[in-house]
Length: 267
Ligand SMILES: [Fe+2]
Ligand SMILES: [Fe+2]
Image: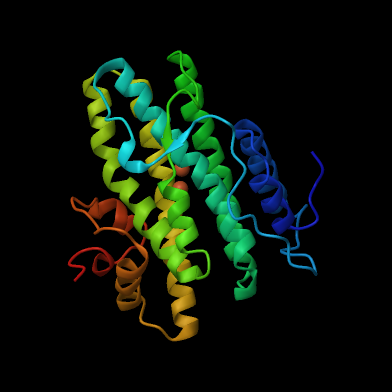
């Protein structure tokens, strides 16, 4: 794999790659190359093109979120759950590279790119862990349909970095912190400690992703002299379909540095 000249070129390469495991390998390699300084430029002179949507494999078929089959209990339910989360992680890989590529006009410091290349490499590892576990259970990514809700959220926030940070890490990834503990408890109760451990490790690492979202949201708000809490609430209304649903994992959200006023009593 050649070393890209800039982190935006790296981002573009990943977004244009349809094969999930190649996306994973590229994300891990580019993440390490940015960390070691082997890639040290953010963007080239000419702005890289930004794909409308990332390249994806032929399977899974993407269907309307409302038409997704209900999750069932037992062995099949477990694999369907793993598949749904693997699909979220694959989207998360592309979302991390998309935020790197899309918002260079906001002139953010190098630390912004440090955070999101690390997120991309984490998401890549998460996808691999889930896919490996599915393989052990006799299934693979692509075996079930998946929905396109995450990329729809990305499209809706493609012109505004504050909207993107609010909706993706601060609403959707934070929601993952709320739902992960009960689902790992359920898995352990059903005797699947191995899948539960994977879910727990992923949830622990997601705290830093929500944390990066909060940090950069507040950094940009401060620069633009915007009140972060009230602006966040305005974005929930204008850019997010639905409400923020309790129960909230207050402890995990606090560890991500998320002030309770962001998500409790949104009016
Ligand atoms: Fe993840
Ligand atoms: Fe994440």
